[in-house]
Image (cartoon, rainbow, N blue to C red; front, side):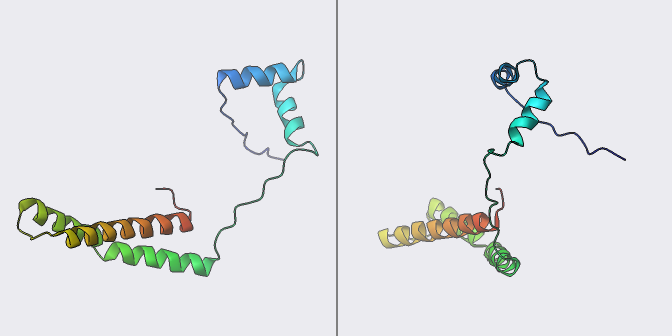
Amino acid sequence: MSRPAPFSLRLSDDERQQLEAQAGSMPLASYIKSVVFAAEAPKYRRRQKPPVAEQQLLAEVLARLGATRSASNLNQIAKAINQGTLYVDDDLVTDLKRACAEVAWMRATLIQALGIKS
């Protein structure tokens, strides 16, 4: 019968000293197991993932957002403004800032909804 792979846990020096003090003469691994598998150990709910169909739709929206080249287009507009080849009034500045904020919000919200770590 093969044994499962060992479980590794990284602790700071202080955390390890605290565990060793709490374990007393008991082997550290035995102490940790007794605490983790105690009946009163806290139970954590699993994070719910969106249904697969919903996740696929979110992924498609994120892909389409990336395919629109909005970031590139906004960069080209910013370059034209900086070069002075585009007339800019207060209304255009407001619209551009709003568009940038909305695109950034959509991207961040989709990444969060999909559970992707950026």
